[in-house]
Length: 217
Image (tube, rainbow, N blue to C red; front, top):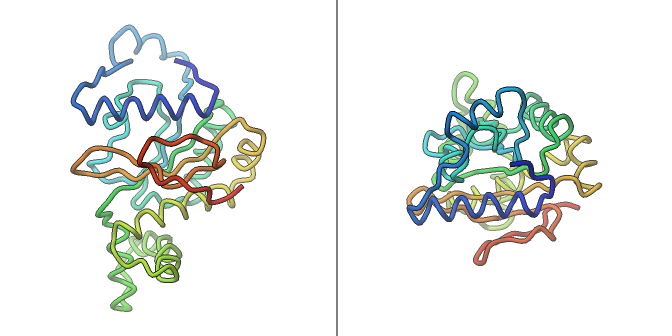
């Protein structure tokens, strides 16, 4: 499958998630024939900038297969230079039309950052870098009067969408030209469903019940 339209790419992801939620996955593009077909090149229709949580396997929850998704994962979907470079590669070299920031409820990175803020004691080692990256989202949540973890998660997803666009001129230009869209999604661990919580541009359609809002552009 080669998709170049952001709206169609988003619809394909949402359809796959519905199959996963309802227990009727098709497991597309996972056979030996397709494996051979994509061996010489890839044309993923979506970049997933997701949390590293072991329960957040993008190909499973979106019911996709080999060559469909370009997945970049870090704890708390933090977006440092290597993540930005990976996203830019997918968008500018592979022509991927959709970038999705994928977070989830009960996020351990958000909880660790909130604990560090409450106690004033940062974690040891490189985990501090993750906590520091989440800290701006905590401050924004406090300004909005949001204190529950899942509410903070949604704010952090939207903040990551903003950060990708603010820190990557390549991505921002692709969005401005209409070649790409950036969407923030929150995954519910128990239900298995994703909800859109941010979208740039705001004209990107969302599923019924989603809470998409424009955060830039």
